[in-house]
Length: 271
View 1 (cartoon, rainbow, N blue to C red):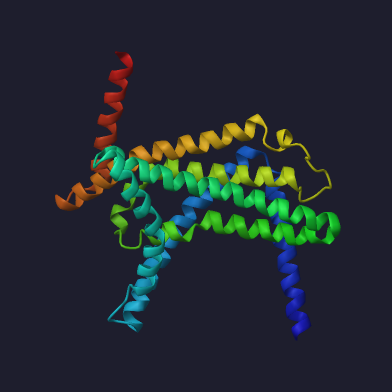
View 2 (view 1 turned 135 degrees about the horizontal axis):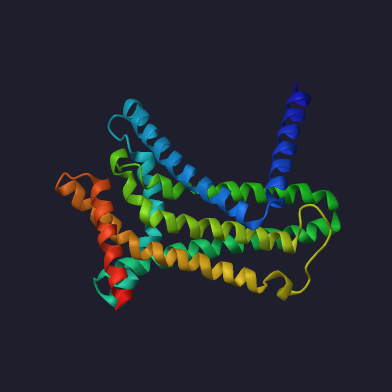
């Protein structure tokens, strides 16, 4: 019985590794878009699951139906609050004080993701040199990190209390936020592949070979996406609060706001 279970697990693991290898063989653009849409799907799925969890909790624990999600929410927001309070003391209470904490937090997250892939690759590089069979464990570790970073459960859990009808409010800044996140993930995988490829024994020994200009450019592009998201995020939540307060259609308010903003930017360019 145990042997059969072990065999099944090994087959499943092997299948996942083969799928992941096929994914890594794709060009950067394909990997980016797969990861990008994966981030969106995961985000919306986690929100839905969070709502289901709250509903089930209300049946099982009527007095504290949101206790589990509240714990997750506390963990997810604590770092933001620390950065936000620090920024506020320096720039005051302005639009910039809303933009900077978002940018700093998400930029740090993107850099942390990149560093995590690099660390995994370097750690397993030593192991693989000693034991080539350790490459399978390395691939498993990459798969695990990829799934965790794409699913990103903490971000999705924060949206559990948003009504479905108001979810479009996350789209404008989410377009750029998830672009930055996806770019960080795929860039991290690219760097990891250069440090320790999953399918061959070629190693990049020089730092220049690993962190080439294209990698630096991709990292900067990811941070630029996060910067754009940071500028839009406060505006999106202002629209959200405005729509709730005046009982307006959030999609209509979003559309009108961004059309007017676009017209304003075009007028500035023409000047």
